[in-house]
Length: 140
Length: 140
Length: 140
Image: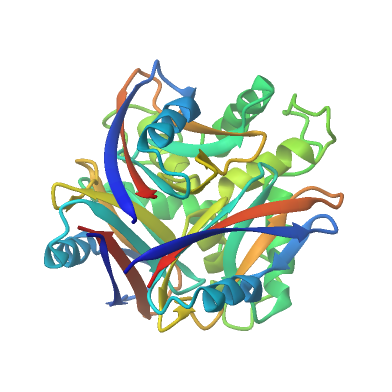
């Protein structure tokens, strides 16, 4: 019979950059005992995002930062929401261009991630934050 | 025992801009009686999108419009799909750069949105539209 | 009573471009017998993405390629992750700007897609690939 559970993870960031938490998610899935099911991950913030991306070559994450720093530069004079710093509005835009929700089927007791897929929290603010992620697991 | 329900919301827009509908979603969740579960929201259109973003300072939405108007300008001469207006193809691109699906766990009888997170329909066409959103609720 | 199933689709691409697989998803939904439910689709790759977009005018897909080729050009000298080709890192960025997960409610035995919505795999690499998609169906 189908069952569900909800969990909360807290991820401490040290400022802008990628924080992989695939193994924490895998631990939750293993703990659930679900062989088949669905994992849904929601980040409860508006200036950091979730990203499934390559977890082999760290240059990929460096290039992501390069690209987004050029596309959504800090201190953009077009922005008026600047009270919290020159990286605040860019952080909101970076979040909107990526996502705060992920949904991953579970099969054979594991997330159906591809060989090169890792699940990252991408911190977009320059200073450290504690970020909350809610996780819903459904399965049997 | 787990139960589910599907709902349809209709959101009338007055043209390009943000339309928050967090409270309509919360009402559905409360009405379901689910203490724990999952809410999935799907927008049935290709020229408007869904966005979870800051709902405190309206300048954030203004800056979003500024950024996207610069990134995906109306009347871009590179576009050939222009029969429905100079904002039609830009509306498709803005939709692809954001999303039309959201998945939010439910805990303690409420969506696990962060303190500053609101759920918006972002209308990308300049004229008014009636937009349909399907909502799936799972829980117990 | 709620039931679930997990499926795997394989989509052969002939290089960069859009590959609609709406009908394959509809066939899975019909086969499940679910009248009401939820379909979740996950692409197991980091250089191709999923996109729900207009499936009427092919010019829309052409304009998407034009826009993304300009926004994330192949051979961008800012990228250092280039070992697999000048389209490799751009493919990762295009994937991050769109998505690899979709969640679509099912009602009346069908995906609640809008009239103009088709589900596409968007291949971002220039050469052909075999792409795997996992699909979770929940319903009754």
